[in-house]
Amino acid sequence: MTTSDHGPIDQHLDDALFWLVAQDSPIGEEKALCDAIEARLGKLPLAGKIRRTLDSIVVPLVKKGGRPHVALCGHTDTVRTENGPARREPGRIFGAGVSDMKSGLAVMLVLAERAISRLAYDVTLVFYAREEGPFAENELGPVLEADAELRAVDLAVCLEPSDNRMQLGCNGSIHATVTFEGKTGHSSRPWEGESAISKAAPFLAELAALAPRESLIDGLVYRTVTTVTSAKDGGRGRNVVPDRFVLNVNHRFAPEFSPEDGKRQVLDLVKDRAKVEWLDVSPAALPNAKHPLVQKLIGCGVRKVEQKQAWTDVARFSALGVPAINFGPGENAQAHQKNESCATPLVHEGYRIFEKWLCENLEEGA
Image 1 (cartoon, rainbow, N blue to C red):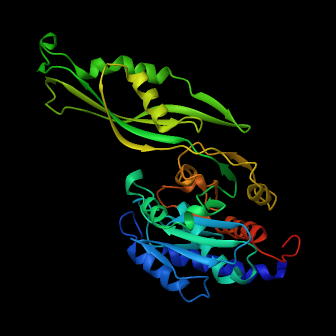
Image 2 (cartoon, rainbow, N blue to C red; image 1 turned 60 degrees about the horizontal axis):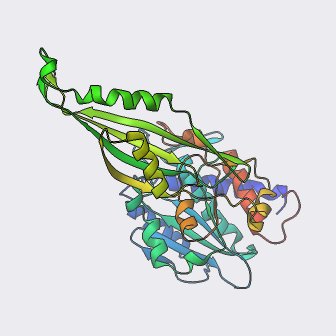
């Protein structure tokens, strides 16, 4: 493809992205968009039947065998934020999920519609639901469980918003309910009670003073951190010494640690001062910087290579022994924002990086 061909492709990308954003798909309401994508891609000369699990689909674009097999993965759901109807402005598209991560979905759609005959690898697309919620409800889990072919790919790419930077590995994540217990009493005679909030104060002070624990893995620095993200008392009344104080503690642990390691780290912080219940436990993933397919992608115009401090679904593939990376055209800073938007030149650039990586007979500099 020459530079003169970019105009039509760029317009196709913009139209595909607007088409995706114009269809609302907040978490739990992805069925209509899944149906629409399935119908759209079902018109193409695919390598096999589209495989559906719940409101998620696996789309085999090309399957010739004897060459690397790559999966491109993107979630269809969005968070529930304040966004009006999808709209366009010069160089930018607005709407819920446009950066996180319908920008990546647009690249996947256009690769299928405009580059399927030139793919140099076997390529499978995965569109899945419920990524923005709890780990256990994410539909990529049952998709992987049901699809042996997908579990055997050579590399998975999650097109999470990363500004066309490659983000390797990911931290694990634990959400724990930490409950401090005391005794009720009248606030005019606090010595007759025991404030659960006061009992929690040393723990909160320790967390505030806790420095990130750095782990150097393949030249990348991952940070283990612990944060209280919500707190509520027992709600007895404004003149009652509270006998309960409940915290949500989010612990992010580096890829060198297992989920069990992460749990022990939380328990070591809490000690025996409070009750701990595990709400959501998500594994970490090691980086795959030296993988030959990753190295080739880096050479196709990736802006930067860095660690992924947050959690993504690369961890699900990693747990199965499948190398996986994060790389997508959406704007990371726009994720989950009110009036979310995405710069269309980033999407155009991201598409061309994928095209150069995956397709045969591209002219240098195309």
